[in-house]
Image (tube, helix red, strand yellow):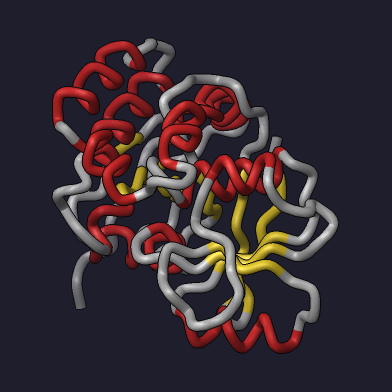
Length: 232
């Protein structure tokens, strides 16, 4: 039997470096999938959606869609049904906020669902940095920031860059300008735009701007469904 570890201090903020850290974490978990999931989920709440749900895999999302007539699926995965792209711009401006929204993605939703032992699961992006940091300072807790690229493609370095900037934000320092410069230098914005011809430019305008959304998504998983509420 391994020795019991002492509780992490209230100001303990760390970044996950592998999936196992997220799966065993019992403090606050914060998921960052910068280019899509994080901003899409935040934008859905910001648009006024009251029923937003996250699923770890397509089968669960499709099952939920059958049980929720009139619901919208947001995903970059081709699910073989009528769906919206995992687009922050569409989530904020191009869909009906009165309908339930279901999200299943390659990296963000699996990253969120990995935190089943966490005391709380939040979603972060540059757009909600100030609101999320204010919430976390008002409710201090040991925190693990989970870059969603750990669950899909480590080359999506924007998640890790944003995670490092969030550590600074939570500690009261503004690292956004340097993080933005690093993301542009990585070439990842051009990669994204090349594969998102319809809404890519408008998505990036939302993703790479700090503080314009006030929602702080909090996800609570129950029977495979992540129910999203606004913690702000």
